[in-house]
Image 1 (cartoon, rainbow, N blue to C red):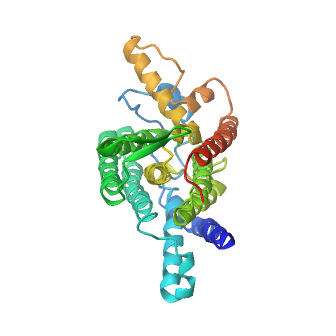
Image 2 (cartoon, helix red, strand yellow):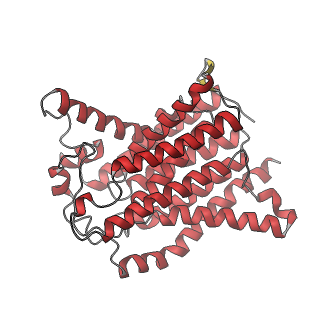
Image 3 (cartoon, rainbow, N blue to C red):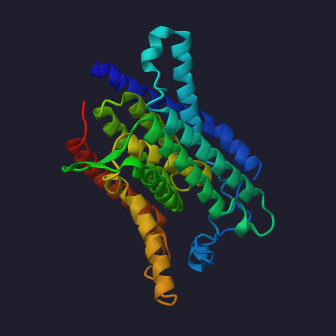
Amino acid sequence: MIYLSLLKVSLPAAIAFFIGILITPFLADYLYKNKMWKKKAGKIAPGGGETPIFNKLHKEKEVGTPRMGGIVIWGSVLATTIIFWLLAELWPDLSKFNFLSRNQTWLPLFTLIVGALVGLIDDWLQVKAVTDVKNAGLSFSRRLLIVIILGAIGAYWFYFKLGITAVTLPFIGPLFLGWLIIPLFILVMIALFSSGVIDGLDGLSGGVMAIIFSAYTVISFFQNQIDLAAFCGAVTGGLLAFLWFNIPPARFYMSETGILGLTTALTVVVFLTDSVATLPIIALPLVATVLSNIIQLASKKLRHGKKVFLVAPLHHHFEAIGWPAYKVVMRYWVIGIVFAIIGLIITLLSGPKM
């Protein structure tokens, strides 16, 4: 039985990887032929101000490299899911490999695709802008509103459909929240959405997200949520395919269509595996990204413009003090692997198992 479960989890990961590898040449050809990149480098800070240090560091990196590379990730996951579903429909004997299920994978797949499509619209608006390019795309407030709506849908599903009203505190036990699980779900989704700015260096977001979803593949498997483990495995496979082409120099950037779908889907996976308390450990690079932004904004507000970091988020601070981008990325990978393993162990020791 365990061998069948392992096969059910590993096959989607492998197939998603190869689908991603196969579709990339066609996607890259389209993106380059249509010049799907920003027409001017630089960005606006979350608070609305300028980002001169970031713009100086990246003045030659954002122009000429297409956005929308995240299509490789969610496209390969969606294709893999459909393939296994069709096989189960056509040949009932293969239904054991179908991982599309109402209680485990409907919601994470839904949030992945909806978030990705919203991000795709934002990317499209950014690359098509010819004037005021720094303010192109969907505004932060509009994207945040969409994330809140997705969070509300997910919270409704967990509370009313799945009856989840508690979160587990490691080595302590369940903390019953009742209806408060709804705002908690929305807050976690907003926090993970805010961590999307980690998509700023070649290979950084792809590697970090691959590590996190790999950890959740293992966690789901040992919790006997095999369909969810297969989904996380497929996401990991899609991320590795993307990463193959995103290692410096990047063939394209993940951008919003990738990171928005991944962070919203990750929220659902976190609650399905009852690992809210250990998420800050498993996803430490994402937490560091969000906290560095919060600290920087708070410092500038409370200390009359004084900054803690040369530039936020944290990975750009390291870049600004002279670390080569590849060194920042690989050290984030190392830290990500170490803490993902620690968080995985704590989650499995303190939660439900096979």
